[in-house]
Image (cartoon, rainbow, N blue to C red):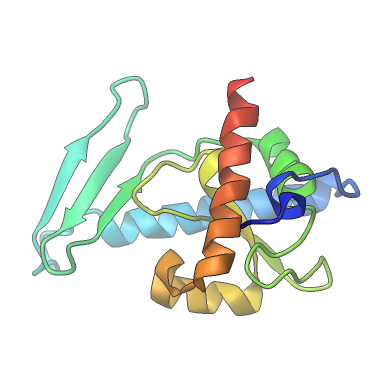
Length: 164
């Protein structure tokens, strides 16, 4: 059973605007890099990629499936703003790395938990610099099962909160 402590976030200390802005810019740059890696480049691409246009209300939102890796990735405009960054940091993740529990003493970044889903609050985790390297290699399946369940419980709580 997942502890109720982890599944029900409480507020943490507020983060300054400069730190929130830096995190937001890093997240936008990370999403842009993902998009640049996926978008077909006819001159250099040997990999076949199927791209599906998703919601017509979100301009330039796509779902890409690679035929070589069989990996599906959503890409499009970032779906959060600066207020969401503060909410994610203080309310949802309490200024701690979702995987290791490291606090603000480490470099923390925002990343999408599930690459096949949009970059909304219910799919973004706060992660430390050490953990991000491993996460980029293995994805969420590389996170141990108990920790993965805890993270997904916290993200579900975030979804419920967004619907309120």
